[in-house]
Length: 64
Image (cartoon, rainbow, N blue to C red; front, side, top):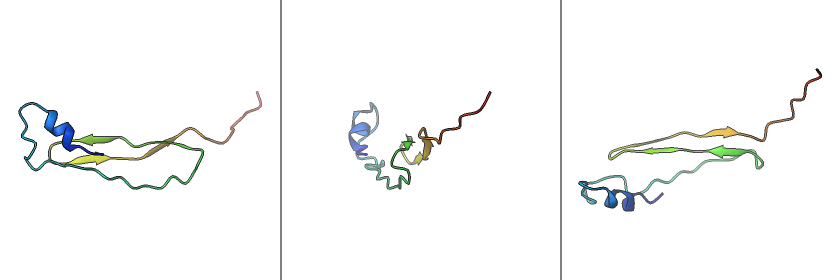
């Protein structure tokens, strides 16, 4: 993610203030049919991310 443009567009924040300019995420997706969600929370001096997986679960049919 190129974050420099985001910081440059923020009013009152100098684009050269040493903010995080780029975030690179590398991760594996072990299930090619799975659905993955990787949110990023960006702050002036840090960022947080986590990986969650949803969908593509095995059929769990039940007899009623």
